[in-house]
Image (cartoon, rainbow, N blue to C red):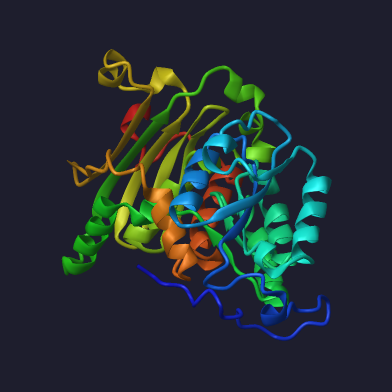
Length: 346
């Protein structure tokens, strides 16, 4: 796995006079011993995984924000955490901590807010002298990544993201096998991911493409990242279906041709899953052979945090290929037929 630079190192880049760089020693924002966290989106679906990861990695959540106040889960993790429903008051509290005692300064900020707010909240983290750990997708558009890279240079802080499939033991082993096989033959890959959502989904921010990025971005970005991580650079993208609950198409990678199907519609679940009362179906096959990775998901966020806190997490550069893929899928033309149609579309 590609390891990023040590977390204490400043990203390379030219000096800038737009923002005064933070003196890391004087600010004391983050050191090996500083595991003070802030968090946005603490009432959200994925927040418990981050709370668990923070706690299990010896972190302490000092401040959290969400416009929704159903955050009783904090009692199970960090009952003393300051909580805000208004971003402006949260920002004020972060600034107070930054200017306060060194042991109370925030060194890390977790971003679990709606997708369209990610880059804004990441900028807040960097500007208070903290590193950001952002849920996927890191941003909605590739040029948002360019802006964050500039701010990394300006502040001396780092942006990390959660690409948890890269730390799944079965998928790490698969990548090692693929890299060591020595075969030049291209493989045929089929990806099928159905994660059922009720009527609420379309009424929430997740059903609004301008805020979530649509199905391919909201539920699929980590799979597209995985495919690039396994099979190299993407050379061709086709989108065959793109609507409010389903997206499907084909991808040509350096070493693989991929047919993919993503859906939040329960009607697309296989009959076997419906008979078993399952609401999610996840399948990846390579040359007709199923890749077994159904288990082992419980601790992936904790492992991502462990690596990130040691400076070996996933950076903007790691996230870029996946973000570029989902952007092209979201904005490109829909081709109604093609050689790479997924079986569910035939």
